[in-house]
Image (tube, rainbow, N blue to C red):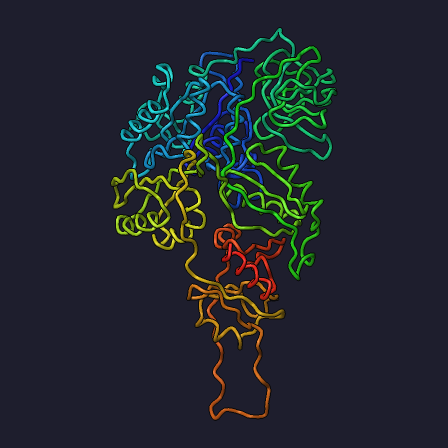
Length: 612
């Protein structure tokens, strides 16, 4: 059967996964009476809850061109749109021969679009540009197309890539057309364009079998399952194979116990796979992502695409709070190490190093969201962890000067809030490089800013813009160190003992600042229960109860009415904490605490720091 391998790339929330739903429906992948969830490719719980794609996933559809009786199999890889998961996208581009670049008809080319498109063009892949959501009332199709062309020129696309075909589509309504004014139809023009424009895999079927592993997952029955594209030759079930690392060293030898290919949302077993097929292969116990799996006679590995380095790290420690072990089932450093090593095997964008005391691990990744998703996943698996404040990974230039990561920040904000955003970004050492009206009373402002200054800014940004602002960030480069950046302005309220929070004690504390805990919550010494209205930390007693004497006041006691506490999500808590604080993460709770719980030890540590 003729074959086409494509990836769909786009910025977050531009409609990739919704478009794949319609490709499924119109290619006949689903039965007419089959119940299918929306965004079927977003299969894990976190993806469904957050409404974003986190893992790159292959699928396939079959479509028969008009006037032909020979169906074409189109292998499609749905990719994440958020920059923090860019490592997923970089790996899978080696599996495809063309890309569909999906661009929102109003928002246009965004930072993540630039990042992934640059990688795709550098590999020589042929792009098809699809302007999606053409039925939006604020569409600006022609300007968006001009932006895409300018982006391709800036990314040094060759002449063939610059002569890209364009389709105008609405993924939600299931139509695409070469006419920008048409607002009905089907996705047949898109199928036809893929078949005509994307070349079939030009790989050697007669050479020995080689296969580059690009995705890794585990199956309870099959063990380790590697997914990738067969680069040359063919393989049958039970054929002898071996795995090579990037230097050509043999990692392990085994047999292909199971071969599977993708049919819609399912993995289907097959007896044989040939060059160009995207398959999943089981039978190896050690081989991992970026390794070459090949026939025994092959000695030269396939060159793997280099992955951009991590820019941010957090410390994952054993939970040592007084409440440790009450809610989670996995609390030891050995369990945490095994889980992080498993994650490091399948996710090449993160790096894990163990500390000297063996009780904590430094986990480096692309951004707060990527590491936040890992923590949330571990939390749901029953782990208890202590998480430190994120810190950026510094570098050095040729002259030995300190360098730090910079990000391009693209902000869409209502005109009235633009001044506040520019002022706040300047305090965080951000430099404005562009500012232009984007229509509808909105302004688009572009900054270049050190990653260090952006940690914890998103919550403040949403408050400043009344929840209407949209911020997109993308790692740009390592640049000169910008010096000290002012952190959180307010201090915190710290519990001075252990017990349950009491309404009688919390009432007066509301005047001191914003509370994070409610009545009846279990507290311990050193736990942060709120934000102080002043810059200093304040130790308080939130457990003090009313003295029960036989004296009564002349009037009856006033009922205590408390404002509901501010409950933080995991990402908000990680962004909020300071250098001397931690987030305690358990399957049921997220608590903020001081890293050193004892107040006397805390004072000693702060004096040492000041002296240093």
